[in-house]
Image 1 (cartoon, rainbow, N blue to C red):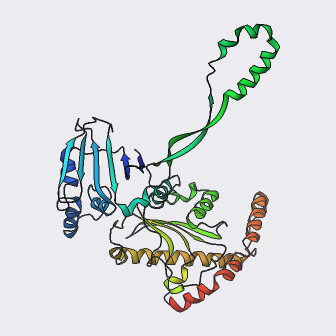
Image 2 (cartoon, rainbow, N blue to C red):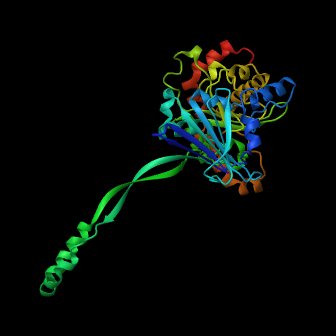
Length: 402
């Protein structure tokens, strides 16, 4: 399974092709028919009756948002149950057409959505814009997503020499001269030229490491992941990776930076949390008010929950009770991480060493390593306090419950 995105600057279109299950003629009519018949209305009715509020995997939900950027939408689809490939087309004028594709079975299996863009949406007719949007919202989707890009490569073109036969008699007389000329001709025949080629470039190469067990993730992967989401050139000061279980289940990785951003206290009261919110690896919000309190706006990381509905309305999501539970647990984990740093500095190397002589001999090497680690972490809390003491003081004023 894969998804491919390409654009046509001349036709002013963007096409998205997948290799999924596809749709038959009946599926196209039922799922994409009209707004009144689309999956959105059925979904809202089902939600009012207390059904599952998960949007992922439901055909038609949110489909008509495509007409925000497109005057016309064409959907070509082929499924295994229907031998004929069909084309659905609409201009959002309360009518649509479904016809057999005159080109035959070009997809094999899957769907192709073509957006005929409005004039004010022509900004998306660029490779950089498509890659940026795809990477931003679908960076951690498990299926590979490719964007068609144009590249220029160097090729050597050999020119045909039509005058070889005219010099037959002279070649017999001047053999040595001919050898020298042939060498020069070979150099001239090979000329470097530019050739335009199109390639599929994968945009979601970053792995969702928070889904893996902590034991399976290396320090290098944690550091690389932090730099990718924070755009920081320094390694993180500390991090915590945990799975919350109970009434609400979610996975998260939270980082404490080494250096405070230069504008950390600018517009302090209007700044939002820098923790990214995902629902089943789909980015819902890069910055969210309710995830962490203001004084923790320096914390970086991700939260991924399967319990949250992927609601189109962000306002509804902010009022969701699940968000309050997640926020409470995140705050507790950040405070625990801070306490851990402070305790490590207080304890230093003064841990009790009450062991038998045999144990001391066998663990001699391990003790040396532990002392080295402790000495390296000795100033961690001091560094953290120096950078973020203003935030913690604001927390004492704003968050008296913790």
